[in-house]
Length: 465
Image 1 (cartoon, rainbow, N blue to C red):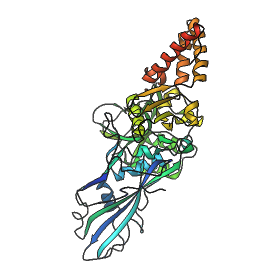
Image 2: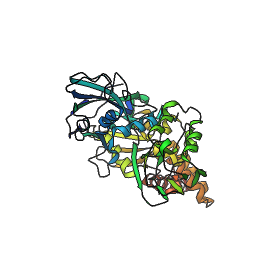
Image 3: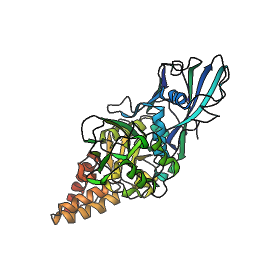
């Protein structure tokens, strides 16, 4: 764990708001952070009589519910990313279990939030975990890693406290202050490259009358009802569709889905323990990355009329314009005249993913003189902020020869396939969970134009530049 270098300690009174502005959030250069460990310390005043048993479970949760977090990337850009907005720490516990396989520590612990209270001032501690971009249960993420130190500089994080939560129910105890320390969980990047990762988002759906509700588009990791634990849910039968494919049907019940999930390989105690507070409807289990189906998740209720609120964790599909802004943010830290080269992290690691998953792979950023930048297709950006598409000469020449053959045969499908293959390494090339078929992006358009020009040159007997 490497501590945030600037603004790592934040102290909040009640009904307070403080955080770290963009440019101040730093980690160790050449590393990437997949999550944040947040060490919390609550200053609680106890009057009149000591409490050897500490705070009750309900009181401990009131402290967590009193505290919330906002996290935004590229806040000053034209299209900021807002993965965490006004999310209470009690809900972070679910996210930590699902995405990181880490539960809050200190809740219900005699050395943590349930420490014995003496008359006077007491300090109660705990650790919460905020997922940034790490997916613990997918092996591919062991290589893909998290957010690099330069990406973290685009993060704005704000913590808020509500009104004092304890005194109204027990006049002998008062929450006076909360102090937070932030520790990014990091790992080294290849050759010290800068890493950009799509952030994990939390969002909700509030349903009152509709039989069917839908998440946003993206890579959906978990969908769960927040209004009751599995044992107490009033939800009856349901069906889950992911993209265009029905994934949970019979129709299923929440209990039958949970029984299926907990039998999956590598499903441990932490992963399965969210049922004590929420009711899971859909979760991605440990599997090969290419077995995951991205796309909108639809929950269709089969019978029953009770309203419900769903929470879900996902990665959204970054727009090409958002990817361009992220690349520009890297180069703006360099001196005029410098240029960077951005290439898919999966491409660098040799991880072959289907095109529908390409938007979630993130990218590495290298100086244009780095060997990787000389041998891979990529998106390049100079200090002036203009993002262009680069293709290595030998690779472009070979692809143009194949493109010319297909063109002479009027095989438009093969021509398109060649352009797509050459675009696999380009950040922002795929803009839909339907893959390349979901829309033509600027990078793909650039590659196609380059192939057209180069194949035309070759058809006239010319040589590639």
